[in-house]
Length: 207
Image (cartoon, rainbow, N blue to C red; front, side, top):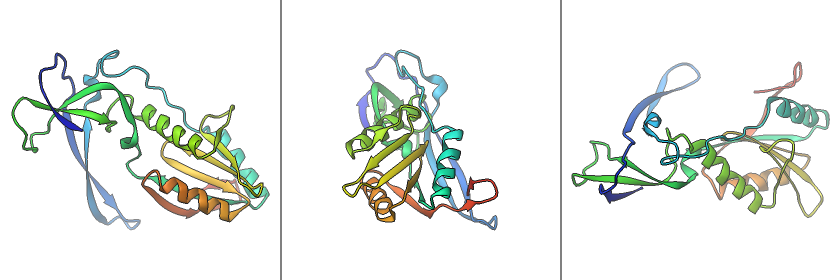
């Protein structure tokens, strides 16, 4: 984001800040998380946004992959992307009014260079950025499901990565390949390693 003089015809976006309580498993509040978002209902199609559709991995695809991994005793690891939507690059020229808490000259606005929570195209731009990184790392997107990526290392080991919005599932027979893939992903995005996924053998569910 950067300041820019408000000599622009359309400045439709107002900022909004909300606070969310983060709780422990026992229900106790451990901290509060503040988030700056935009009011997406102010956006105008053709000016502030164009396409908004973004794919997510299908539920049936996840069940198939988990069943395949369970049957072959493959390793399944999970990672969560921190503030994933903020990684997207905006193609449109979007300006937002500066929150009143910020000390900026009167008449200035913020020029959004990166996606922000609340924008209609935020999810699409995150997927676009994630897809670019996966392809750059040597992965190929599945024709059947655009959120499933595969890669084969120099030893012939296969890894399958399924992405549901900002959650990554790494599946491979080679634990070394899983770890190196997670490390590569962490070099491009801020990731939280959730470790090995737990399986419920009664229904093949992931927890």
